Amino acid sequence: MMNRSGKFLLRVATLAGLLSLSACSVEPWLKPYERQNLADPIMAFERDAVQTAYINHVYQAREGARGAEGGGGGGCGCN
Amino acid sequence: MAVAATKFKGFSRATLISVAQSLALLAGLACLPALGSVLPEERTDLMYHSYQGGGMDITGPSLLVRKNFLEKLSVSANYYVDNVSSASVDVQFISGASRYSEQRKEQSIGVDYLNNKTTMSMGYTTSKESDYDATTAFFGVSQDFFGDLTSISLGYSQGNDEVSQNNYTGHVITSTTHKGDVNRQNYRLNLSQILTKNFVMNLGFETISDEGFLNNPYRQVRYLNDDGINFTLQNEKYPETRTSDTVALRGIYYLPWRASIRGEYRYFTDTWGIEATSVEVRYVHPWDDNWLFEFKVRQYDQTKADFYSDLFPRESAFNFLARDKEMSTYTSRSIGIGASYSFTGFSLGPFEQFKLNLYVDHFEFDYDDFRDVPGGKGLNAGTEPLYAFSADVARLFLTVTY
Image (spheres, each protein chain N blue to C red):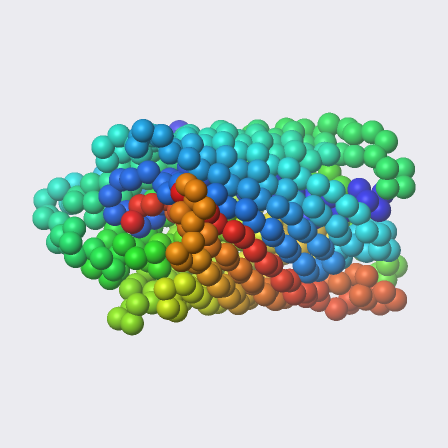
């Protein structure tokens, strides 16, 4: 008997699998030289990890909800 | 007693979750715009943070240092302190107002290893208070594929907490009683997708399961006396398990005049009956080469836990009892502004760039079924005004990259 978290993760894994399969059959539509705007620091979901962690800390302390904050990415250099 | 009754009413209640979050941040796994696998940027952030509202003052420093090695390995360390000084509604409720102070210290280390398009991350965090010790270990893997337009990240963390209760004489801790342990497991999945040359989306899932002593050993609930006018207190009682699922959808769009707009929707549900949504819109606008401004609005709504009540009808009315305002039905709205200034043309040895940042958020909390007992002194139990408060949150920090 799979527990609730197990079922949730199975659904998520299935979704991820489908996404990766579908990705294989399609050509990437954006060339590296077309990614100038995306590489701009203003396009980071979060720019500064230290302040993002803090504001998420405030949310977690003052709200009943938790998880999937995203956050992070600040300074990850992924651009 | 006055002091004891307030514990966990600061940020402590969310200690472990915060720890896990910090790990995810340090590990850089949640690095959302997936534009090719590279190591995180080498930088140091020295921050001073401040939270003021609802009778609580929480301030402290934070230091984050990240250094890369051999273009394969990135190591980070974070030191963080919460200095809490409080006379919140919960203090007044129990004791008739008494301010207390406490401190929480958190230390984290993290490592990222990059191999081709795969990043593996792990980290470890400890958090210590006089009556709450927490440790969390984190592991994650992130993979870019499909011409680096898509990125999938998986993360797992396990936390172990030790919950204690301080016994006080006046404001002095005379002894500490161990109350129980908590085991927490977090499972995360993030999908990032570049859709156009101006648009990136991200879908995040997280399941968290807790098991153990989930109560606050100090907090009490109230129930109505037979006279129908006054109330009596008893200790709160929570279930020993909790599982929550959260999904978040985010998008960020590059505007034609070099600015960006970011939207987020998050939905939360748990086995305690709480459902919550949050919506946020953020606008970022650069000015000249030095300035970056940010504007943000956010709204949060939640329903109460099944076993929450502001005033129970009688003693031990249900198997589980809670009167934590974060378990009630309420709404919060916030606006935030931020400014960053980069000192261009200035460097100091290996330190290439200096940036000064200030972010301020203003929150308004309105509770639908949590009453302001101290503010309703003299009124019959259950007829006190509903509680509401505002809070200001500031982060001032210096960033150095090298």
